[in-house]
Image (cartoon, rainbow, N blue to C red; front, side, top):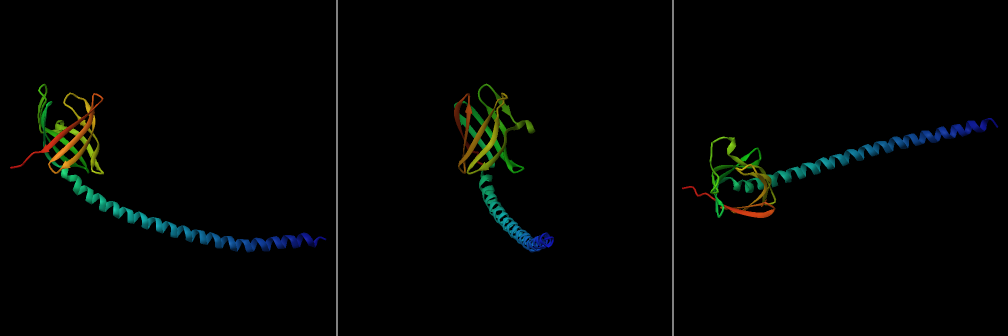
Length: 171
């Protein structure tokens, strides 16, 4: 009767040994599967990164069309502004502004900048703020309507406001 627990223990030992080889084999298969999955993920990231880079280069050329000197004339006043690219974003500086009560002529320093870093997304320049001479600032969206015409949209005093700028002709 004492042999019975020994056979039980021997059987359990044999089962464990056979399981151990199966477990090791499963671990190896799981590791191999993980390596293949990671390689596919890396390949996919490389593919999408190259596609994104191509899109960014295409969008960048299209987005850079906003760069230049623009003039605005409407019932509220007139201004001459320049948009340039700085560190991948678009910024604007004032050359001249006059609304009848405030006149500003460029000083040639950083105080001339009135438009914060805008980013081009889906045909619209977004995430920018337009700073007015009186200290107020507004979130602004800019759309390049034609190569020579910009449309700015913002909210002034809780009312939607649209302004059109025309590219200044160079002679």
